[in-house]
Length: 500
Image 1: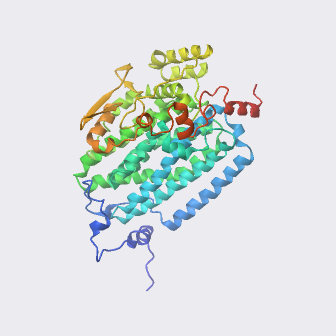
Image 2: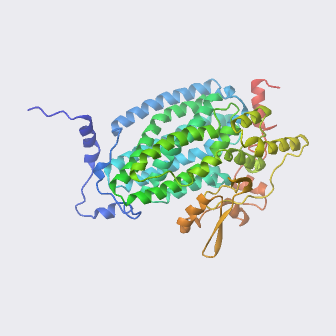
Image 3: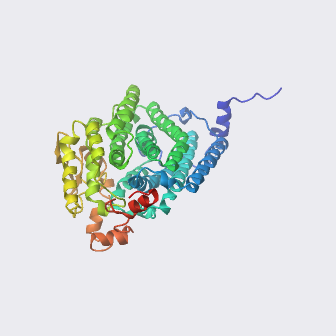
């Protein structure tokens, strides 16, 4: 009798799940020591479902085809001097933020998923994490290659890896992943696989890739398209993780809810840098941060959490605060970087009159009232040769490590300050959300490596700011940073374009 042909599901199970092993001479708990210490209860790993059912053989085939197409376009972009097609030299500064702030996170995700996958007793979860780990490594490599062409013509892209480890504002994304990777495997999956990949990733990738398209950067656009099929799998894995945990045991629900609250807040704080990129750094605008938040979180995220309500999951804590902050965060962040432009690794500028009018249109209730007067004053000072730079170092939030730039939502003229005392020391926070996270895990966050504190302690090089920028951050002071007007980046671009 001929052997029965396997269906796709059985074949996938044979090629993945059935490669697992039984423990004949070792305790299974010793093989997976991190599986229980977070309090998560798993009753049946076989209930894990992989909607894509992708085997490694198929995975390599699909990815190799994407790589061939991607690098062919990169080569064509370079051969045709693609840097000449960007809308304005200001746009390249968005790439500098992406390369120094986001691309290293892809590498941390690669390491995180590789480690986390090893800790799961279920082979289905291990295979899924393995594929995502390889995806993340591919992403950082393709991002670096996509932007390497610009390094030949613009300043500030040359030392991105060094900058990520040392520069003050880059401690924000770095601390985000350090926090996640220092957590247990299930919290890591909720933090990155669900909260960021599923709930918030569209607020990161769509603005950057759409912004690239609107501003003539076809190298970054092409990378974005190449990554989309990977991101589809990542989002599906994130949703599967959350539903699997909630269905396994009712005791998991409060633990997962606490993680969702934490990582939603940490994720939205991290996205502050994306908000300012959308509203201020793109010469050709895509949409406002406020519009993006309403589409990708309030509508899409709202529908998601309605679906999860049947498991006992509610909207993340302080989502109502973020709904109010969408009117303010981009303006507050860009003003902070404008006034600290001498200490950043990219150029800053005052919005043009047309851009100020666009912001007034997009933020009719807040921009003209709170923020336009600042830019009008900045223009007056610059016209008199008094371009304003902050001389002091900012106070940082112990949890998210962002400077204290956020305001009270019931009074946007007042900076938001919170504090907690732990073992006799006082710690400062930008919000109730960050304070709550600290109070839940103080032993973890008292170890925060805060750049301003380290500078004052003499751990970051010389005695003044320029020494730190030059020797510790390895910036070319006055070339990589300061105002865009008169910068080598702007002058070279004008020469290429024949602009007087």
